[in-house]
Length: 170
Image: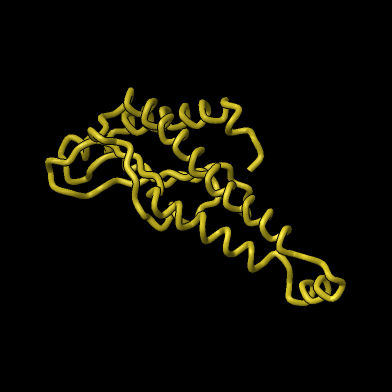
């Protein structure tokens, strides 16, 4: 937020049994996104006006409930738009990465990772490979493979921003 980021991408290498292989793309679990949506709405309702402003508005017979409701609705919609943009970006990453590296069978997954909960911009966590799989470990050590995968992620980013949905204000 402070740096005006338009995307958040965390890149990791996973650890599991030696049979696990391939990349996985994680987005925030739908139920967690819904809880964050409710939380955003609640926070806005509480923080719209300071107690001093609220007191002044009430003194003059002003009804602040409409303003609170509108701002809460906007906050709720912002969370929904961010989740939709996250899903669009995740599909782009999977599409372009699958041309450059093996992917897990169900590469598009949801999780409650902390890094995905805190971002107010489209956010994904990319597990590139499994350090415990000999083939994946060899790939991770290969500069050619890393360059190829990095290029596919860059292409996904460029493709995402070429769509009008990504250029709309948050």
